[in-house]
Length: 214
Ligand code: DX5
Ligand code: ZN
Image 1 (cartoon, protein in one colour):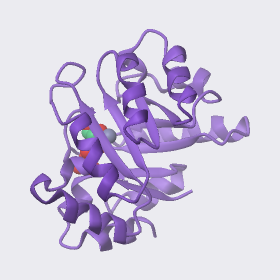
Image 2 (cartoon, protein in one colour):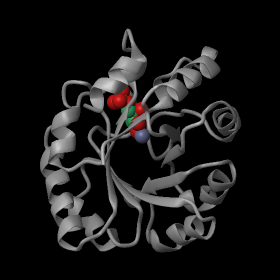
Image 3 (tube, helix red, strand yellow):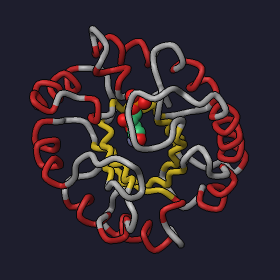
Image 4 (cartoon, protein in one colour):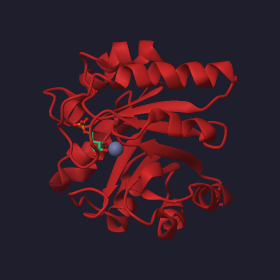
């Protein structure tokens, strides 16, 4: 699959509705929503109050990426707020299984995420228990960082594992994705590419999305 999920973190929040209308008209597949708590990551983004306008103005599925401690406290509220998928970090929790069950009980898709310093093998036991895994290709916390090249081998490793076991788990890549590296990421086995600055800072965001899908 070749899906593009623009990250609203890089949108203009003074003109959120217009930016979302651009996304609606574009070839974007999902809207990626980065929630940061200032504790799991050294940055604070936004939370529930913005889920409402995003659900109201955005016609694309809302892909929620929680960069927070204690995701078990909040995943159900994000499901109720209209998330199409809810992901949280494996390294933020002791046992992801009960939290995945909370999301599944809401009939929302599940995603497990790891930062670049977490061994990709730690995802293997969960590949058949989630709808998607998200490999961070920068350290979670900020948009506009440079892609970490070591991510490529991790994508190939997870792709092999998913194919060998004939699973349908999606692989999402987040951080430093742009029109120059998208094709290579898809070729390595990624299904979904998150792109923030490469979309919203582009002179023609819809064209950037179109080019990433080629
Ligand atoms: C970073 C976020 C990303 C970020 C990507 O912590 O998870 O989704 O918005 O931004 P770019 O595409 O600019 O690296
Ligand atoms: Zn993200």
